[in-house]
Length: 138
Length: 138
DNA sequence: GTCATTGCAAAACGTTTGCATGAAT
DNA sequence: ATTCATGCAAACGTTTTGCAATGAC
Image 1 (tube, rainbow over the protein chains, first blue to last red):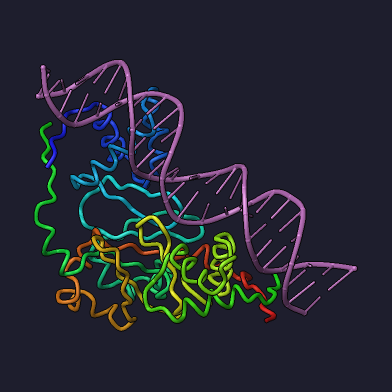
Image 2: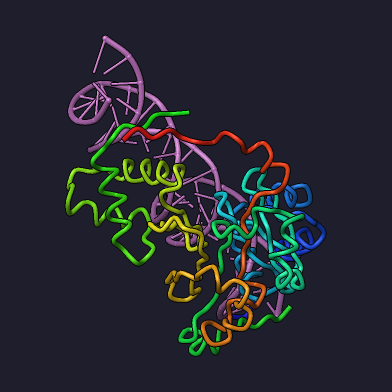
């Protein structure tokens, strides 16, 4: 349990991420933020992205292209990344069940079995996962 | 188009991966191989893992825990990784459709929307993805 | 005054690459 | 003889960390 203090840098990072529809990497976000805060450091961007992920305000996307991507939309939804052009698309929850059929038009490669990765949490760990909250005071 | 020559190191890496049921990282595999080939270098392990992925003999798994994992089973199937203990489990193809229900017992967290990542290939890229084969001569 | 946050630079980590040597064809 | 593969070490890109200074409470 940790108390967060307000920081204009963190607010800026969050605001910037919410305004974007792409799913930028830390570095891409850093470049954007720099326009408003030329002195911000890359370390600060990483630190705050990690904090925002911990509080559940944003999502981290590990797509396998080297750098993690971030999503300002914390609501449950899926993602699809093109192996070739590396673009990341949102896939709404409702598409989950219909994916096997929907994917035929949307992206034939999506459910070929080689291209899907599930991340989750097993029963044992879910159990002892009771108190991982961070208090926010801003 | 590239021709591969036989190498006992590559065979050993492949054999070692097929015999394991876990999904080791390059480094973990390196440690195993070293017992048989004490002089093998980490670079060689990485180079051969990349080759084997390209020829489709093994699979690379990017799970978001820092290092890529590798799977000696090239047949289409899904994977599930526990966010806490980092273990990677196989999830058979048939489970895909039944996952939303099956997951309730197997791993309640698996289909919560935050925990799933789809990797695939969009129509455009699938089109120009004609000739990416590597000829193997061994 | 206390403790979180910052900027900076250095380090850490996984992975790739350049190069001279060695092995396969 | 040719060309691919190896071992080694250096370099790379991403992310984390130590530290002294600054800012929030």
